[in-house]
Amino acid sequence: MRIDSDLQKILPALEQDYDRTKELKAFDDTKAGFKGLVDVGVVTIPRIFLMPPENILPAKLDDHVYSFQVPVIDLKNMNMDPAAHTEVVEKIRYASEKWGFFQPKEIKMELYSREIEKKVRLNSNFDLYKSKSANWRDTLFCLMAPNPPPPEEYPAACREILIEYSEHVQSLGQILFRLLSEALGLNPAHLMDMGCMDGHIFVGHYYPACPEPNRTIGHGKHWDPDFLTILLQDHIGGLQVLHEDHWIDVHPQEGALIVNIGDLLQLISNDKFRSVEHRVLAKSEGPRVSLACFFATHFQPSNKLYDPIKELLSADSPPLYKETSIKDYLSSFCSLGLDNDSPLTLLRL
Image: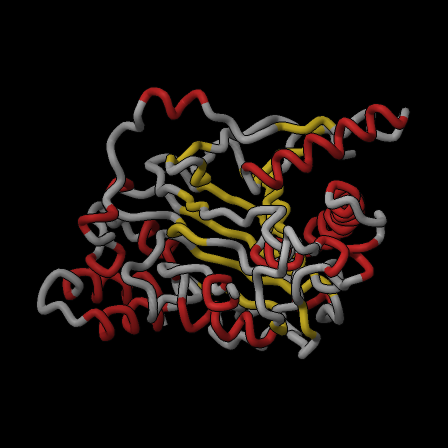
């Protein structure tokens, strides 16, 4: 089967009698993804990728929005003396409470599938058939822990660097979870002892250059369904965070990764830390690549129950959420899709 020929055949049909379900399947069946569309020279966006009119992005943000910046936290000297360590903890507490995002600096086969049980898979939009409009990206999912697949199942082109990078991110995760525990006033090992680091998933997003970036989106607005996310974005950027009702650009910082609080950490911290909406713009430059590492056990969800940490509760700070398992939370997340509210709204007391 020639993928480029298949795409050339379906492109004209996408603009005639519009049957969204049929056209989504035609696109999905090519298994070429968005890279395939760009490779065959698409110059206008097929209708399945167009955002609803009310979601079309403004050409320019309000000028005062540019004064906001996601906090950048230097970890370089945090182990040199207690005062520097305390300062880092305070900065992480502030960023996690007010932003839900921060940027730590100085940190030294056939894959296309929609089968969620596969430990390594590539597809275009996990919610392709549920979202209001398809997002302009392809995604590689890889389970890194626990029980990762044999190394030969990872793509040969990135196998060695993927495994090495994952090991470094795992080490950074231990540092961050200890700091986050301290920021909550808990023992440094508390969050790790709860199992927040038991699962580690690598997600690589590929965003081709888009011919009409103002009419679609790279990754629609969403909350992360995990405890913590560590993201590496390239020089092109495009990530935006919703802060005080404004979409704020997260500009790439040399030597800095991006960390954001996930829904599950908001739940167990009883809203002391915030999981916030974020999105990725489609860009005329490209391709853009981002590498996200999610700390969660999505591939092997257990029935272990999570609820607000008892040490954080009091008469003045009662529990805000019902207990839930990762399995039940994921079921709600998948049923709602990315275009809707966070599953936390269903769990709030």
